[in-house]
Length: 389
Image (cartoon, rainbow, N blue to C red; front, side, top):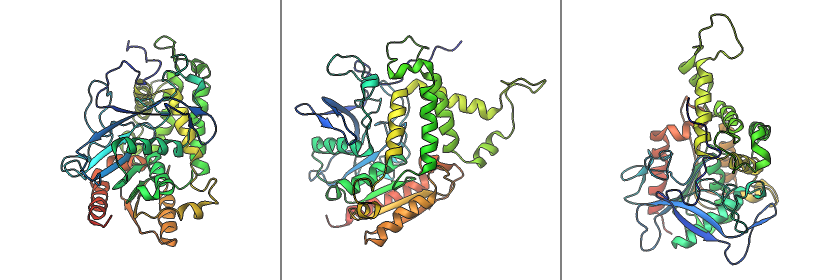
């Protein structure tokens, strides 16, 4: 039998550090969160590639999506269970060229790969936060990234780039810190979460909540195999369906079966079911159920217009040239949402261009179509680099 799934796939202090670096904040005063509550002694795990120029003018921030982390480029190794999620784009001679740019990626607040999150030790008693960890927003994530920039001496990013939840962070950078960004690249994202997006993510959260091994969020002292991994895996199976297109599933799996249909039973599987089970268990080995709850909630709360007089008022704060990208087969974040961002920027005078990637892969296209995404991103970076600061 395969080994029992771990209670959490979170990185913990004492685990191999790998390429991680750490910034600390809220050591002298609390980090007050947008939705209420506060954190103290916060660690932000991040990785860097390339060399920072003497004037710090070549720094690019890459923002990760829901189940990504700071390991945006590089291989599997000590401290890193998965290869970099954008290795095809980041590296020497690649679209985000680390011979030319200094690239930074930080694990978001509430994450589980080195940044303070539910699996982290609470500063008061050393036990995991668990259910005590407060709800965070995309705006809270961006404020921690600004602290990392301060630590590195980066006054202004050459560009901030990211897809999906990462794209939400990109847009918030443009609204919250317009003077600290020279260009923006939001990909496969939206100015505000739609009702259907909220429906999908809330379904996943309910699945985890219904797992009896979730224990209200306090499961970290359970034995291997006794954590909420079934709930997390099932939530991932649901989301995996939304990440790909019908064409991809049909072309790859059709109606192929795992167990022969020689007499019927409820648990005979089609190949697509085995694929979803594989991805569910894979995530359970490297992620944390509480973090999944927190980050999907942050995505549902995403709304540039909240507390800012509406979307138009918020978008008017974005002044940096923006490259908006969408995937033509994306059903989770349909292209009308990216076109809306692009058109809203143009309407209020912000330079904006829109690129639609042709791909059969659905939402995951921003991770898979490295050639199309890379060409557009590289051109934007080169143009920004040549422009006057």
